Structures are given as structure tokens and as C-alpha cells.
Length: 141
Ligand code: FES
Image (cartoon, rainbow, N blue to C red; front, side):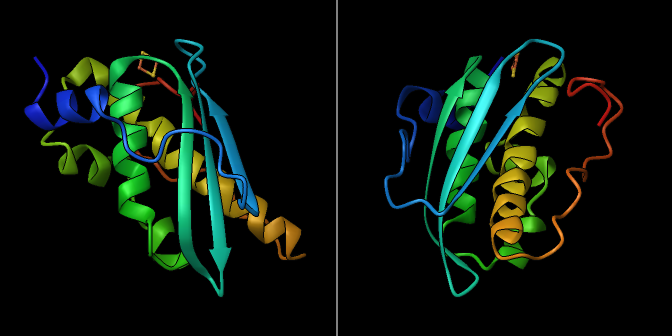
């Protein structure tokens, strides 16, 4: 049912825990299942120099969180904002259809953390939208 990569990231998730040096935090919840994902970022000169996560959720949510942190590390904010749930899913060699909604959490958590950062800088926060799935897994954001 799950790819080897998903299983590997679930068994050995990268960048787990709270990041003490974080200057941006994003927390999102999945309205369908109640799972919660929190992403911590250390952002310097518009680059995500460090990142970690805490996820209370299913295996697919843990694996997508782990992969999402790997994908955004070292990226500019603009590049990170272009990372979609599809990109995270593809990097994991796919997810079963009924688990695609779990990957939306990772995309939203990235956006929430960057929005938090922009708010702190006094810039207009970005909207928490971006996915074009029709699964209602996230409550139809
Ligand atoms: Fe809730 Fe996967 S079932 S995020």
C-alpha cells in the first residue's frame, strides 16, 4: 500500500521535535481526521536555514511532514511557497488515494510558518491556500 520511501520516512522521520532557534512557527489541523502538524523554521535573509516538525497524526502525515522539512531546508521563502502537496507526495513516490489529503497538511504547515514570519516582519500575511485537491480533507480551505 505504501512506497518504501513513505515507510522509511515514517520509521525514521527527519527533523523531528521543537526547534529552539525557530523564528517562525506554523500549525495546521486537518478538519477531516483531527490530525495536527506544527512546523518550526529558522529563517535568515529569506532562506530557511533550519526546520523541524511535530505531527500528531497518521503515518502518511508523519512521512509527509518529514519529507516536507527535507524539501524546504536551504530554500528561499519563495521557493518554499512553491512546494505543493503534490511535490511532497511525488518525492515520497506517491501515496494511496485515500491518504492524499494527509499531504495537504504539510503544504499548509509550510505556508502557515512563512505567513507567521511575514506577519512578524510587518508584511501582509499570505493566504493559507494553495492546493487544488477536491478531497475536502482539509475542510475545504
Ligand atoms: Fe489525518 Fe492522515 S488521516 S492526516
